[in-house]
Length: 356
Ligand code: IPM
Ligand code: MG
Image: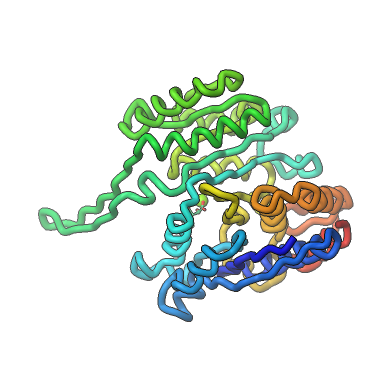
């Protein structure tokens, strides 16, 4: 097969980790007889510096034309004081909106070989962690109106949180269908005791659930969910939630698996084209030092093969190579433990490639 992949290296450690993931994709292509063509799509702080905007039109066009998009990470302290429309994050939000990526899937699975890195009590970790956060990605307060104005002699800021039924319904379907292939439990997370958007969320998800009688539906308030995720993560299979709650809970869920550096994510809309990225940020403090863990990005590339290109065997080859590398005791700094071999970003990429 021939596929075109738009590449957004991004800021901070982005270029290093994406380079390793591209190397892994090339190894897979050679082994399975595919051809991947890469098209650069600058986005983030580097694009602000070079083009004056976080998502240049040409980058957006390259992403829309590609079969899929691979992203490292964007942002960094250098651009923190930029006006809102020149912040690196704005590029990512614009891209999600323009590509219609309403479903963000963030699996949080504990690798057995990394259980020592799990920050939870051993008896809690022993029950295992294997959950998926399905986050609504182009609605809610992220995409509502934002404004700051002078009111009664002081600044007043407003962010509007809005949801329509169809925005809730389409992501709920994805969550139920995913649960059907897993342990058949959906936990819908909201703040229905306070927010109207949450009451509509709960009502709509409950309606959608009727089409999936084989899946159990539970509702949970977001504050309780934040607590339950560290108290007993084994109770969760598929979590479905709105944009902001999903942003927060997916960081929490990933970190309890041992390292946020290991977790990939996919963002999809209608059709097969998606945006794949690690869930961690651009880690400017270690950028350019060959210290970053590329596994999150490499596993994101595997997700791309599976979900966008229907290449299950190829995706499996990457996941197995990652598992074997960890079993061999090869670790980047974020997941290093006594008795293991500490390697850098490039060496980790090479170790994984050698096992494909
Ligand atoms: C994420 C990030 C983004 C978000 C930022 C960079 C805008 O935190 O993908 O979770 O809040 O969605
Ligand atoms: Mg986030």
